[in-house]
Length: 324
Image 1 (cartoon, rainbow, N blue to C red):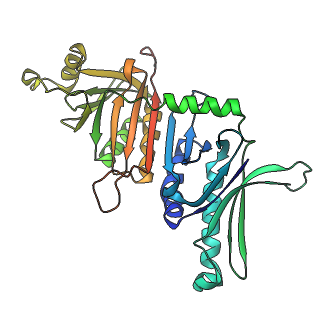
Image 2: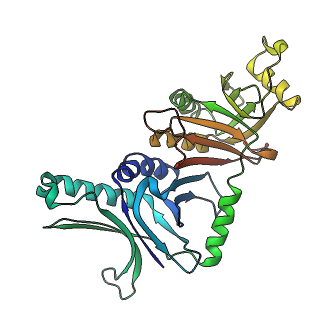
Image 3: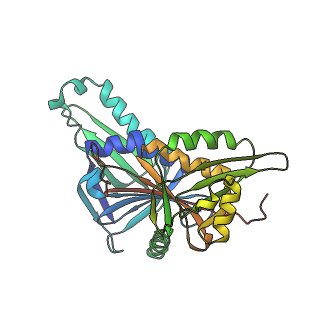
């Protein structure tokens, strides 16, 4: 079982400044799943508890000289503490910046930051342990950071992880596009102090409705006439003068909308993916209302074209309608 590659400058910036800060908000521990063509960070796909997040990168998006081999069809997966990985990456950048070689590129080839799987003896131990090692070398010095990881998953566990990943790719039939993530985040930030459960409604008209109700207060927000991908239909003129709640209830009755209840904490946590600086997000409810899906879209810098080398989406578990 072998893996080694070099992080590109774009890969270093993407991970250190955007992806790792965002994913760390999902949870400190993540699976890192490496295949011949992709590197994938996965949260909660095997235990089924809490918010699930999937960040997938084509190897060319962050690596060069990418090499992987294993007896499991060249697939390797393990658990890793993202905060430790982020700290190790920042530490290498800081040490480099503070070193004298940082001002003499010929003495320090920082463009070749290698990442690889190794086994080492930890201090005060006779048992070799697996690490994900970051290493860069200059003519006069080298910087090495070892990040402890779990024992690589067995063939059966990797297959289970792949099946969970395949199942998590199911897309809602209707998705609505939210470009102003800051407005949504500010609203949810206020709502999270009101209650624990949020009702989320999405219509084929392009409406996204959020609501928290307690015995003493009801708070809601509506984003209307959003761009729709998938199944869509025109709104009813006779609903124009109705309240947002009444309009949503009618749409649900006609089969033009779906409503689910999710944890406010989960919804707020999913919005922390804005740290990855996506260009917009799509919201949808999975078939049979099994989960709320949030897909973050990234554009190729300087264009309005989707960057297909990066994908990030979350799946929020749906609460039982009787949840309080």
